[in-house]
Length: 464
Ligand SMILES: Cc1ncc(COP(=O)(O)O)c(C=O)c1O
Image (cartoon, rainbow, N blue to C red; front, side, top):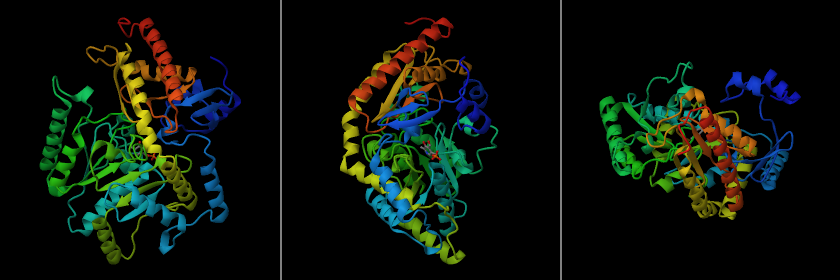
């Protein structure tokens, strides 16, 4: 192995890396990135990579958008910080709240700003609890999430997350969080069960769960339209309409976590529009600012706002909010981001590019290592399996998806290994058709090399 660079050594001496095997990185060193342009990022040695994950599902406008940089600079010069505590306000936050109210397909009276997806989903839980106390139903507090969901890492949002690594040894989940079944037809659909029948079964299971727990104790259901970090899981057809009906029947507040799907990822402004459901509230983050600065938001419907008002009168203050809630620089960048999305008709452009992206993705379904190639819009994943016919997974210790990701890096492509040996793709929304082709060519070479290795190490019987 090549000796570690000076920067890599300093990194190892100083940083705790999120979502990293901390033992491995001490030996391999980190990949140190220096700059970005378009859909490309460049490491300190000048090597170019297609950023096939838009960073962490966020840099929708790529890496060199001058307008966003200019919006930040101008706001920093004019008013670099202002807050919304104690009845203070400022123009960028007001304007952004107005814009979001216009855009979101949920009944929205007000907007509450946060700084990350985790904070947004934590805030959702707190608001639901607060509202139900205000409404005189203090028992209605349980929140239903789903296995393999990803809603963040703070104590409450990590409890909503349904992935083992976020809970093991962190003493999570907290109480009053339930996990319904994961809507992944490839893995959990029964022999001969159609997607629609699978969706009907999942809705019936949710209904039974709520009945068992007691509808007067179940407050909310939270879901990503397409599950991201859980493996890019596209729900079975008719899933959300059936789930939403169950929620309505039991007066369960439906929270739509649009942190990945929001702002065009599925070819519609919001993921719920592509998948055909109308939530009570939406969490957004990431592409709200194209990832250039941290910002997130939660939408508040009028009945909830009335409950917050009542509590505020009773307690004297609405006791929630962050120092950086509605940060003016973040709000200015978000406003510019939304302006560019509208001006460039970016969501329509995604819808136009998606069929080509999805065609290249589905073609990978024929690769001997790929059990399922799945996606919608400009998001997708391939799930690597040891045996296609039986869907047998590789032994987790073989870390096959991690190897594929490393080989993709060698080929000049950033992708990400997710739960269940899924290799995910979520490029900047500005990616061109030619760049999509280049992305898939590089990924195919990486998968071919992974296959060679799997055959050599006898992890797979043959090349089929
Ligand atoms: C759907 C979803 N919700 C919430 C989060 C958490 O966001 P953050 O990392 O900004 O806290 C993420 C992060 O990837 C996400 O994908």
